[in-house]
Length: 179
Image (cartoon, rainbow, N blue to C red; front, side):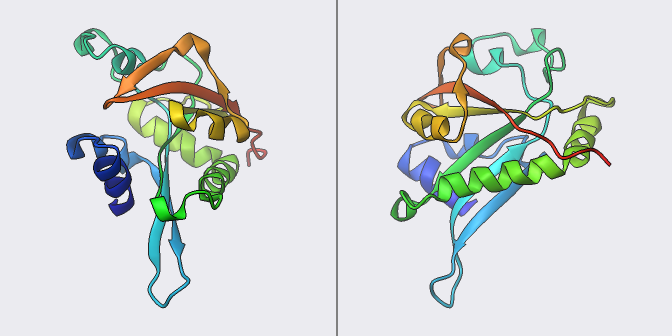
């Protein structure tokens, strides 16, 4: 959490109250540590949020009446979301963002049942995840995600999340055979 607070709250001025959300308890998170000294220091993080996700309208239209929308979007194909990717300033440019994305997606490929079970706990029924992945990329990070194989969804447009312009980017990953 310290990395997210430093990057998002201190550097990017996101309100601390917006940094921790309802997805944190139901997500998987990875941390990269600098172990070049005797003390291991966390330097980079990523979060994988299982389906279902909140309707996109709640993000792109902050004035939308939340009571008129379902809490979760179950009308579209289930997808996981990579979020809260943060690397401390002094460790940027070392490929840690790619390593985090690769680790999270590699884990997801082999843990489909766990992802679907997390979804089932929320919606009370089975929704099959077929490898679809979304990132809400800050516009400044769009090129990085393109290098990772994500494609910008022009239909989603651009929107403001906590004062930072974002775009939606998709990727489909191959999954390991189900057991």
